Image (cartoon, rainbow, N blue to C red):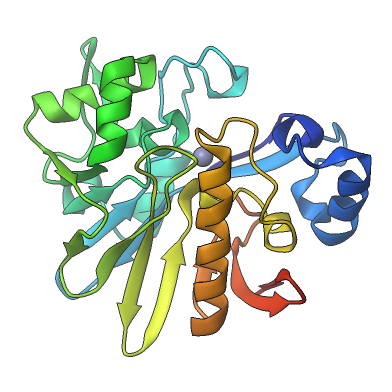
Length: 270
Ligand SMILES: [Zn+2]
């Protein structure tokens, strides 16, 4: 479910390692991630609905409505029905969701976890268990940032949260891939069935350009070297297994395959 596609940060601020040459490379290799008008990164914000024979699962919960965001105006106090309409169009109501899995606890992945009701934050998905990476919870609960207070803490208070390790499995189809670096407990989510694997990247990567340049870190990766190592490992595995890769912030349609190419990788969009 797509919530928005808006310009977000100058590419050379987004990827400080890029430099002018890297920007040229991006213009050639990932042109649709650049806003023609502003020159900024175009960043889709989306969650993914997975229906297995056992469960209905939402992977990542976007920005949400009425949330406080000090650093990005277009994310601040939104009032937009697109995400929930998308959920319904995909054949699920909020009541249908059995599990919400957050790849990490950043503001654009936890927003719809909660919504404002009579001035209080309450879980948007009343019947869901919410799966949060425990190491991310440790980190963000000590920081007590606004996203944690508005979108994570109310879920814990409602006794709907499960803090899990990176080896957690959900039913017969879903498992986590530990991909720390962007945040301490970041995970990608793997959906496997009949020998085929799809992976939701979360913010392990933000752009297909990072297939060619896995060493390019996002400016706000928590541990840049670890993030780059997680990307290399993941790209190696995904190219070998020929996974269907769902890049959370990749240009729409955001899915494709990764192939090995010289000392890095290439992105083959579906
Ligand atoms: Zn993100």
